[in-house]
Structures are given as structure tokens and as C-alpha cells.
Amino acid sequence: MNTKTTSKIITAKKPKINVITLGCSKNIYDSEVLMGQLRGNSMDVVHEAGKVGKDDIVVINTCGFIDNAKQESIDTILQYSQLKDEGKVAKVIVTGCLSERYKPELESEITNVDAYFGTNDLNNILHSLGANYKHELIGERLLTTPSHFAYFKIAEGCNRPCSFCAIPLMRGKHVSRDMNELVNEAKILAANGTKELILIAQDLTYYGLDIYGKRNLDELLRRLSDVNGIEWIRLQYAYPSGFPMEILDAMNERENICKYLDMPLQHITDNMLKSMRRGITKQKTIDIVNQIRDKVPNIAMRTTLICGYPGETEQDFEEMLSWVEDTRFDRLGCFTYSHEEKTHAHNLIDDVPEEVKQERVDAIMELQQGISFDINQEKVGKTYKVLVDRKEGDYFIGRTEFDSPEVDNEVLIDAATGYAANGSFVQVKIDRAEDFDLYGQIVK
Image (cartoon, rainbow, N blue to C red; front, top):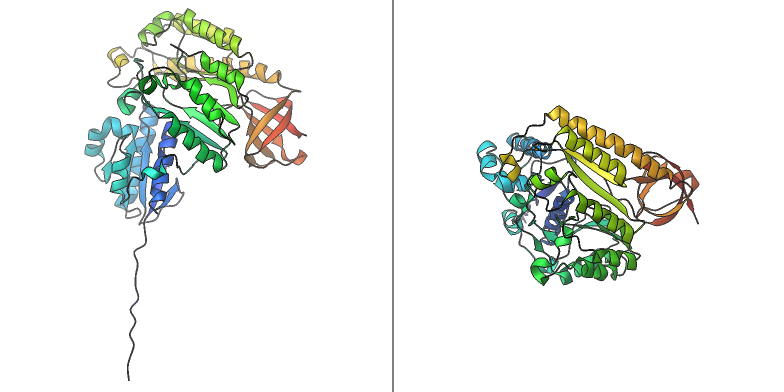
């Protein structure tokens, strides 16, 4: 009698790769490109999964911009390296800005991380994970945002000499991306349902100088505006010195270029601007803001300010406070100064006490809260085109063209008065306004 034996074939389960992103929208973009490449290599990849398994690989994309961000990155590395010690994850890989800036220190202090990579090490990260960089996937990303909007990085690095900023140390010099490549990426996104492109870079206004010999953001805007399916294009991180006014012509010409501009100005007094190496004076700053508003009268302007920079006197602060009150920005963020190693300002004495820095930030933001409330009251009774991001409780929550996700105002639409699908545009009549939120109903 013949006996037939069978053997069970055991196939090794592919590890799941869990990518964790810390920091800004540039890091979000980088994580999405990495995940797109991993998915293109037929690898199981997730973003910030709540649960991890013992066979999982964790990739942490770190931020190294200011003290709080650095500490969050270090805490996250320690958290997952501890899980590795306990046998609860297989590998921990660290990349991003903190790793670029402090790799030797991290390697000596947190030794059980499997590998540290910098900001431009995509190929090496992929190889460490058993994947290959696929050129045919250029423009392909695995979005971590809702599919209807996407961060859209048009350049890497920065050539500006700002004294307080460590970005050039972590991201290198400015490198513009090829315009045809960007248009192709926009077409891929649009084909997959993306309706809003949020253009990001360390400095959008420098785009093109390195590869085309001129500032070319206006041409890029027009070409992206022509992409079928893209209904909003939003500009973040414009630099005031040498601002190319022709981008405002494109904004006026094209309905799908949002009347929105994020221009971090950092301070207003001449002595602070000079020490910060911003390449601009108080009067020129005031002039550029006025020129922008004159050219695009209904534009929403967002800015960012720093309180407590070395040598900032009470008079400097009061002058900035008065300027904020006079200028009435639509959106404003404010941060305490962070004394960063190897920056030009690190040679100065960090002489403003932390509690004074925070008091000044609080005063600026309290003033801005009142300004935002007044501006929002003027919107009551008006109807706006709103992009719906999500539903929470009894409300659909969306944004007007004057609002970027995460940082700006939101429109809350009473779900009892009408239905709005995520990613859809609806017309909303505003019937109530608070400091940073608008409330309204869908109208036909």
C-alpha cells in the first residue's frame, strides 16, 4: 500500500511597516512618497496604526525644528525603541529632520534603533526595508490626508539666511522640482479624487530660480490651474523679500487659485528684522502687505510671528503688538523663540526669560482672537463655497477658500439642515460666527 505524505508549506508573513510622521506638512509629503514607494514594492504599509505587532517595522519621520518638536520626536523614538526591547516590534528606523541634524548624538544615546537616515535618504531607507526605488512611481503617493486635498511640495531646502532657522542645516539648499513632473503629479492626484492642492516649500517664491533662472511660480500656478479636476490651489510659506507680484495676477485670473497667502513675517521692528537677517525693513514689510491687498482686495493673509528673539525689548514687542492691531491679519500664529544650535542667532544671548516670551505670545494671540472675531462677524449673512472635510457629531465641517486645514477657521454646517458628502463643495450661508469658527446652512 502506497502512503502519500504531505508537508505543510509555511510562508513567512511579510512584515507590516508602520510609518509615523511628526512635524510639518513637508514631512507629511515625504512620508506619503515613502509609503507610495513601499506600496509599489508590494509591501504592507500603514500610517500611524494604533496597534503594532511583534513582526512590525516602525519608521519614525522626525521633526527637529524647535525644542518642543525635537522633544516629541525623541520621546517617540524612545517609546518604540522600548517596545523593540520588549519584543513587541521587530525593527525601529528613524528618518527626517532630527535624524539629519543630530544623527551622531542619536546613535550614541539611543543605540537599539536599527538605522538612522536623513532627509534625502529615500533610496537608502527603501533598501534597508528590502525595497527598490521605482522611477515609474514618480508622482505616486499614499495620501495620509483625506483624498480630496493634498500637500504639494514644489521645492526642497532653503537659501535664505534667517538667523533663527535651522531648516537649511536639515534640508539643505533650495532645489526646485521640475515643472512637468509637478504637473504630472497633479494630474495623478486629480484622477484619484484630489480637488485641492496646498502648495508647500520652505519658500514658494524662490521657485524656479535654480533651474529656470527666474522666479517661475506664476507659470507653475497657471499650469496647475489647467489640470482638470483641481478646484482649489492654495499657497503656503511665501517669503516677503523679493516677493514676485506676478503670482497675484495669476490669482486674479484663475478662479481655482484661492485668494489666500501664508507669508511668515516673524517680526516688524527694524532692529529685530536686521538681527533676524530677514532682508527687509518695517516700512518695506508694511508696503508689501498693502500692495498685496491692493492687488487682490479680498485676499486672506496669514502670517507667523516670533516673540522673545534675543535682544527683543518691551518696546520692540509693543511696536509689534501695535502693528498687528493696525494690520488686522485674517489669520495669525505666534511662537516663542527657540535657541537653536549652529544657527547665526545661537551666537547671541537668549536673554528674554521663557515666561516673558510666553506672556508676549499670549498677548498677541489674545489680540488676534478679537480681530478674528470682528472679521468673522462681517461674514454673517453671506454665502461661501465650502469644501467639506469631515463629519463630527451633529455637524459637517468644512473650509472656505480663505482657510487651510489644521491651522485656520472652520465652517460648521448643521447636519440636520442638509447633507454634504466628504470632499464635496457646497454653498453655505453663514448665520453665526465665533472667534475662529463659522456656522451656517447649506443653500441651493
